[in-house]
Amino acid sequence: THTHTHTGHLLAPRRPFSMSGDEKKTITEIHKSTNVVYQAHHVSRSKRGQIVGTRRGFRGCTVWLTGLSGAGKTTIGFALEEYLVTHGIPCYSLDGDNIRQGLNKNLGFSSEDREENIRRIAEVAKLFADAGLVCIASFISPFAKDREKARKSHEGSNLPFFEVFVDAPLDICENRDVKGLYKRARAGEIKGFTGIDSEYEKPESSELVLKTNLTSVNECIQRLVELLEERGIVPPAASEEVKELFVLDNKHDLVREAARTLPTLQITRLDLQWVQVLSEGWATPLSGFMRERELLQVLHFGMLLDGGLINLTVPIVLPVCTDDKARLADSSAIALVYSGRTVAVLQNPEFYQHRHEERCARQWGTTCENHPYIKMVMESGDWLVGGDLQVLERIRWNDGLDQYRLTPLELKQKFKDMNADAIFAFQLRNPVHNGHALLMQDTRRRLLEKGYKRPVLLLHPLGGWTKDDDVPLAWRMRQHAAVLEEGVLDPSSTVVAIFPSPMMYAGPTEVQWHCRSRMIAGANFYIVGRDPAGMPHPVTKKDLYEPTHGAKVLSMAPGLTTVEIIPFRVAAYDKDKRCMDFYDPGRSESFDFISGTRMRQLARENKNPPDGFMAPKAWKVLTDYYSSLEKSN
Image (cartoon, rainbow, N blue to C red; front, side, top):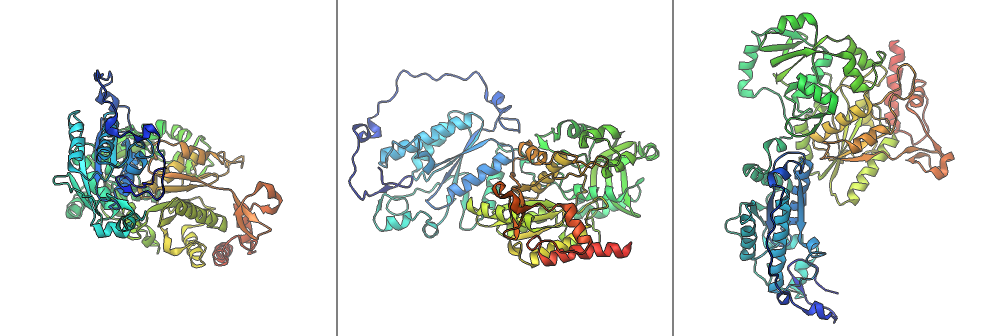
């Protein structure tokens, strides 16, 4: 066996070992190929670029990360790979240790073998780039001549090559020393260790320098993406993660003054909730209420197709009556008014027919008018108006909860301030019981086992319209606060915020919207449960949607590339342990499935559930709510 453990360094052997005759050959003894002629591909790069990735266009290139051991090359390389892939840019990361496991396992650490190591890597990177991928090569590659050969190899094939110096001082790298290699090099156990007794030749004209002792991983990725945008590798739209629709401060007075002269359209509370959703960027890249082209794409494909394939499964539209359509049809802009106050301007409006029944059939799979949201759709105007929105200011509801209504950009900043390296989101419209908490605790445990250091939970109750028999938002927020107060969830690693969308009860179609919205806000893990966004059929009282389909559809849904789906494990009340636990089919008689209906009945009757089902203070909030209903009735 070999005693080296790190790319580019030679460890002194601790005990004798034997080698076969083949292994004793140095790389310089291997015969070079002769009589070889390059064969041109029949498929052009531009043609290949049309089908590689979800964003059309050839983007093949190599990003060569060079620097000392411990500078952060692998961390940055894998983070950039994740970023690009999740934004529809095909990418692959080559890492020194991984390459030594296979392709270069027959190479040692002589000067000749080190040179051959980098040559092979450069050739492999060039093949990936020629295939249309962004290839990220993370290698110490200490010698300038080897890096220059890699560059010239790419340039000779008309492929972009970007040298990135991952620059960290030697003392910082030694302090990081996760593998203990610097310590062993200082002790003389490793010979030829770069930075200790073998020189590292710093790049003099690299395309980018990343000082990882001064810059966070996220900031490094942002600078790399900016470089790739400047060089035409990454389209600007790929990095536009949140598209807010607020009027810029320096134009606010001008737009508000102009709005006073415009014809007006009175909008409903439900419409205003959708204005909030759009203005804060939850429906990025929409620039306003959907035009007919966008609505057709959403209804028929569940996607926006212009500018890449973007998952969007719910219509975000503005209904108007026939009289308003006739009055406003020739207007170039319309002021949207709610409760006597202008909240936004709709630019370049487009009026088109509101096909109520077809919309409902496609979105909900039913046209039953007893469904509460379908009822609202059927009763709304016969026309829809789409157009670009200019929203004058943040939507505030002045209900004591506005501080929880964080926009996607505000949530991203909060996660950054918490140094979060993983965000797992939990969507809910009901009170939290200990079964939910168990799922969230288990998700956190699994993320820590994956190697994440600071996973953060986004507890994100839906705050828009809900049906009449749901627990109102204010009471749910009190209940969630009680759960945190009792320590069922860790307040230091939990962000509680309100998602402003109305609830549509559209099952698997809607759950994709819920997931993608959290993806926009920075979540990279999403917990999905039984019958998400579902409800009983208004007439038959059976499940409107098959309860497992939401999770199944979400795991297959296109366009949700930046988020990993975490399906619910079935949790129930364990009568033996007197707590919520994951269901064990071998002990089925020990488990009690406490339904939402039963939970609400217990709360209405002011009875306590079994010990361990819900935090006592949180249960008290629920019983207080139902008690308040009794009093009001």
